[in-house]
Image (cartoon, rainbow, N blue to C red):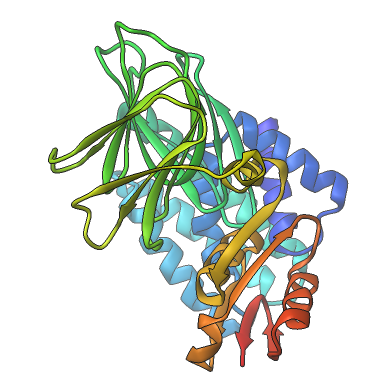
Length: 339
């Protein structure tokens, strides 16, 4: 019943019909079924286009291809696609309810299939753009994922000699220390080994740097090529690696305590930025608000901003930035063009 309700709420959110109470219920269900996040992103991708007959046909074909990659039994694929086509014909009449039924039907089927695959290989936990996720790993360690992030680990996590996870994006970790089973986080540029601690790791594939900030305890940060390793043992210490030339780890101590807020403020629903170019800030805002931002004037991207967003909508945030630096923007279906 909970899975059916989960996909019903996902459908209502996609159709823009979910109430505040229903969105809260959805977040609670996603804490129980975090593996559904990947499915949400995939299905949502095909339903964000305009709802005309041609777009529906294109989404149907694309979704069929996506499902087939995860399905080894041809008969199940054909059954799922045929069911979807029947519902799509109803959607062409123009009812939002039909869209909801389509997502529920395909989503619930894909959820069960994905769950079956996950148990045999890896477990994927995610926070899509515009959301955050809080999970407890099988060993009791806790992880908070920021928007646009994924965490994966193999089946049997905690039972092998080393507890290993892979992070793409940003996460805050409270690791349950176990000397007999070291905890290692793999990112594209560095490996981070826990020595009994809580810390923040930021490793978005599109960012210029990979960063690890120690909050409590100690961690060891090692370049993936093994050329350099640094141990952080004091709170507020931080390491930065340039993603384009990952040959050196730079270690620094954060300024006074108030700047530590910038490293973990996202956990308290605050987007903090200090002396950041508009281009870099726009990437953060894309993940934070689940929008796409483009610039018609490259020079605007170089202007720098310092500030905090908390409860602002994307429109309010942009209008606040306009008070600091003059620019114009237009918003069409969550695609924002700045000029």
